[in-house]
Every structure is written in C-alpha cells, then in structure tokens.
Image (tube, rainbow, N blue to C red; front, side):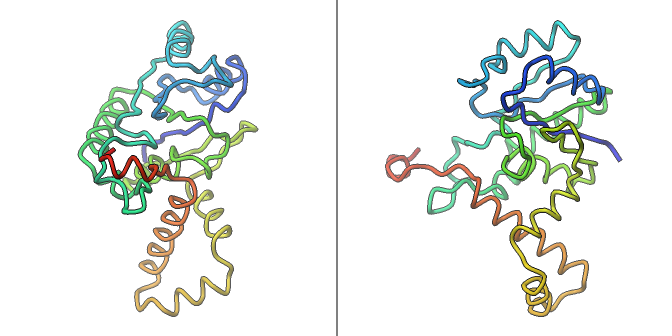
Length: 212
C-alpha cells in the first residue's frame, strides 16, 4: 500500500519543518494552498519555500489549482456558495492532479501534501485530498503539530466522535437498511460532509450573483 503524508506548516520555524521532512524521508512537498503565501509565516511563501526546499534536495510542486480549498469553477459550489468537496473530488482537474501525484509516487518520490492549518481535522488537505487518496487505498499519514503521526483511519474516528454520540450512531445504523460495512461507509461519508460544511470555503453572495 503506497503511503502519502499531510502536514500543516502553521507558524513553525523552517528548520523545524525541514527536520520533520527529514524524519519521514520526504523528498517532495506538494503545496495544496489556493494562495501559496502567508502573512504570519513568510518563510512559507511560495518562492522562499521553493528555494529553501531546493537547497535541501527536496522538490516543491504547487498544486493549489488542482487540490486547493478555493476553486474557480462555480459548478463545484452548492447553491449556498459552499465548495462541495465531493464535487471537487470528481472534477476533471482534481483527477488530473491525482494522476500526476501517482506518477510522482511511481517515480520513487516520498511526498507530503502541505497546507497551513496545524490540525488535519481543520484542513482540506486531509478532509478533501487525504480522503481522496485514502479511498484510493493509499496509506495516508497526517503529521501533527507535535511531530507525531495520525493515520487517516484515526482521523476518521476523531470525526465520528466529534459529530456522533454512540446513541446517535446506533440510530443511524438502525435506520439504514444496509449491510454493516455499507452502514459504516455511509456514516464515514456523512462525517466528511459535515466537516466539509464546517471548514469549507464559501463564496460571498455577491460573488454568486456575479458568476464568480
């Protein structure tokens, strides 16, 4: 099972960031920020970061167009202006990005998807991109703020605990007339949808009226 990592740069020093990459033998950083610049952590601005990584033998790829949390295609937004992660995952641009990542892995790169938020539960790198690769049977490992690893499976358990009490889970399972594995899969899809609503980018009303 191929492995991919995710990480949030937060405001950690660039030296601490590089140490984490070295610890996990990562040699390719895929930037999934729609806007690859940070006012509070300028060391992660695209050009500075690319130069730093290059001088340390690490490749940098910007894939914010394919995997970013903001998309220019209005069809990927719901009627209320919320970016629908499931629509994004099914889009041609996203799937082109997935293909490109798979090619990098086949070339021998050990890669990490990078965004800003320190907790993967609060970031589309895991709720959108990590989910997509997990569903493609990749081993998705989220690097936490403290340097420890949280697998996508454990992240899903956090989501379940966050959104559903044990009694409510039982209610859902009783309601769904499906086999147990199908019930679990539907519940997982539901918590991803709920998290999408909580963290997803939302267009302003005037942007919708103007067609953007």
